[in-house]
Image 1 (cartoon, rainbow, N blue to C red):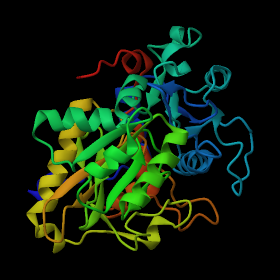
Image 2 (tube, helix red, strand yellow):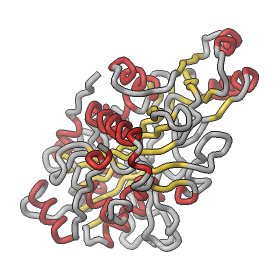
Image 3 (cartoon, one colour):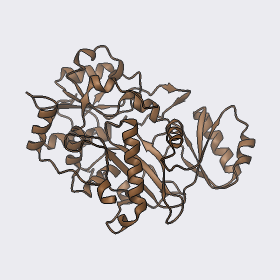
Amino acid sequence: MAAKCATPLRSLNPQRFGRIVSRRLYSSQDPTVAVLFQDIDPPVINGVRKPRKPGGYQDSGADIAYTLRSKGINVTTPDPSPQVSKHEGWCFSDTEEGIVSAVNNGATHLWANTILFDLHPLQRSQKLTPYASELYVVGQPPGLVENCDDKAFLNDKLRSLGSYTLPRSWLVSKSDNLDEFVGSIKSFPVVGKPVRGRGSHGVKLCHSPVQLKQHIETLLRESPLIMIEEYLAGEEATITVMPPSPEQPEHWSMLPVTRFNHADGIAPYNGSVAVTANSRVVTNEEMKDPAYGKVMEECQGVAKLIGATAPIRIDVRRFRVGSEFALFDINMKPNMTGPGRPGREDQASLTAMAAAAIGWDYGTLLQNILLSAQRLSVFRDYRSPF
């Protein structure tokens, strides 16, 4: 079962890659890629605002632009000669002005390395509409992200289908009686976290009623709605699901990457501790455990259900040692840093680590993601399955 879930695609050399992209997307020209960074504050959605990342993902954006260029892909940048040692200058702003500037610079493919939402210029800008059938986007449709970035919404939808394994969870709002709620929790520890989070921001393992109430109060100062979740005490892993492409017409799971060296039960933010220091791809021997194959199939099912058009990364954890896994965090925009630029040797993301296990270097991973680009017109026409 596991081998079937993780069947690798063939690695692509730049020449063959160019032919495939031309055949699928453009009959007369090679793609020119512009990477976008987050320059717009996410809006308040259902009373909740997703925290903005400092720097707006320019670090991974620079990694993507530099590495694609090193693989022979045309990449346009706002700075004609960006410095490899700096994050700035490689990516265009995701504002309407920034995106139009990228198109005017010759971009045929926009790599949306940013947080999207329904009112984002990629979805709504009338200035981009004339290019909707010619311009291609790498990323998730804004409508998908707006719905599925809400952990409570997506988890409830998956739970209602009855075919996904999830931990127990509770929602808490500012109008709730906190003493009454905390008193209803009979088993500790539990995890408190935002419903629209980023990385490990606001995620904390609470060992007692007092600690839980204090953390809830802290979270509610940032957001009117938060989530409390059953603590999963077993092994943690993360699984990247790749989108369909010309060579692989279905969603498919990369090998799981197991996590270790947690800080009080929670995997630390990758900006504090490089994931290469606390993560590794599971071995062939470990993959004989059917729990891996089962959860990989569940992850593929999620990606297919929501219609993911770019990689998603799903964090999973066993209820206890040796048990099955549960899905506990579904990431619409996984971190995509990687080695290539000087001084970035230890910056492989969890997805890049999984890719290396099937023989893809970071550049080959990016080339394969680029194959999933879709027309802006299709991108804008996404319809939710819920």
